Image (cartoon, rainbow, N blue to C red; front, side, top):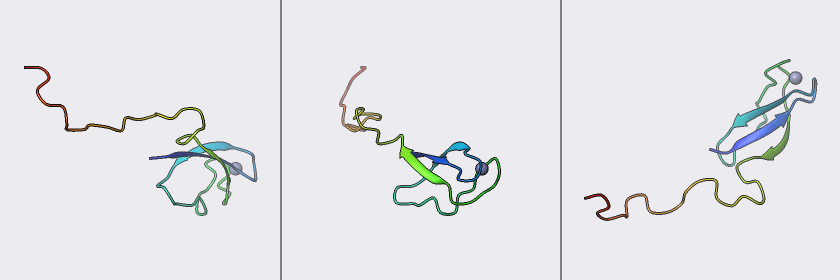
Length: 67
Ligand SMILES: [Zn+2]
């Protein structure tokens, strides 16, 4: 699940929110002052430079390793 960082437009509080892909942060609220509609800063999930933050590959395709 991607992690997004938001900044409150009222008090400037930074906070992170996990959201599904395609979801928007329109109904988010600042945890500090409860103001709505924070500014989305960036996604830490798809940060440029790091390509592999999780493993894509064989989840059940490794035959007989152990016995
Ligand atoms: Zn705030």
